Length: 484
Image (cartoon, rainbow, N blue to C red):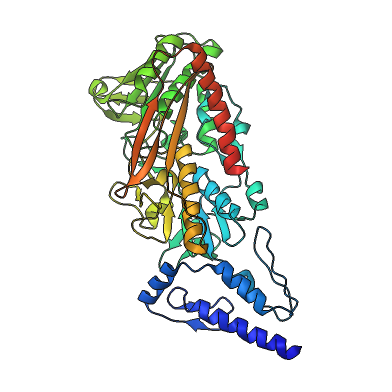
């Protein structure tokens, strides 16, 4: 009996050696038994072979039959227990690291483990609570309490995702390592990066990261949303609100105009008299413009004024102490200034060298793989690959497709044609919401928009009210899909 067990162990080690010869160039066997060195061309061949490591696990388990080894098939890290068993059995699963726990990253992690326990999935996120930027405008309008924007990650942990709450300081692309603020390093076979957005802090004269504590952007982070809400609730009769709207591309194209709508709603509900909202835009048109302007005239007559660059002549100076915004046309003395600045990919994407001259991360339309490093997939707002907008719906869509592709590449999972959709609801008043959307396909390396649609100007009040209910239902369904 002992001789049979010994032969089984030898056979298992031989299987391990064969597997490691197919691993990336010069890589230590995860059992610690040996180092395998091979050429880059051999590495490429091995990747193309699409090794199914589940078969390796089953082969090792079979070879060790009779040695009291238990291999877990439940979600989460597999484990083996035996005086003869090696911890390597728990480590042969391909390692996928997801950085960023928003609509893109959290969805990707969830769908990676949903296909089975054959991947080792780690989600790295700096914060234990995520505040959804999508639908946050309804908080400003008093239609949603802040607590309903907050989500945690316990359900993902229960599904088998390993959670690491720490700040990422560096992505070591050549070593395939993610370095954390506590000094630890996490290796990956494939990285899914969802770093979100950052701002061009010096793009607007006089506005800065420090100035944002007085003139908030409220485009990321819960503290900024709360600050803007407090300021909005303090606007007096006759007060002026200035909204500085950004150039494209940026997160959620209709959001600045939904925000102005919700600000006007908040003023109306408080009974504020004579207050005005001026939108100083960097663009000469915006998403669903006729629909928003019709809604403003209907619900908030004389309150919201939109100015394009030809009218205001450009932002010349911002003074957060004096609360003024100066354009070629005039100087606005405001009670509240909401500066939504020009945007770029999040810091991690830029620091890792994954951005191009646009400031965004170029990706392959069919796989969301970085055009700079194919071992990294960039999803969500940081990615740029064609017509697909930057939105929570889009990030969720990209994440699902990417999870499918990564599973297929690493463990031979099912591969379906890549398709994208995006739908966006914008609330003008509690009973008046508009929407637009389209489907998208990868074509010639870019994501191309097909069959776009948008609400019509002559829609009935009943239809608009129905769309307002749809917006509420969509948010509930989306957050359940991401964090449930």
